[in-house]
Image (cartoon, rainbow, N blue to C red; front, side):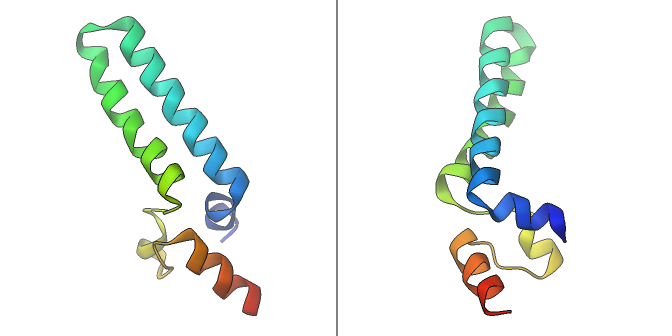
Length: 75
């Protein structure tokens, strides 16, 4: 699946981090109930920094990005 290959790639990690930081910035700047958006933004930042993909196990892939890239290289 192309989406998972992208999410597990280094570029996908960067995109997740940037999107997460953007959500945190918008939520923090708008205040009020928008802080919930900032809390949601923590998930993509954490998954990008930790090199994990939470969608992977739903499709029978490993959680770890390193393990996914190692297994994809063997195919």
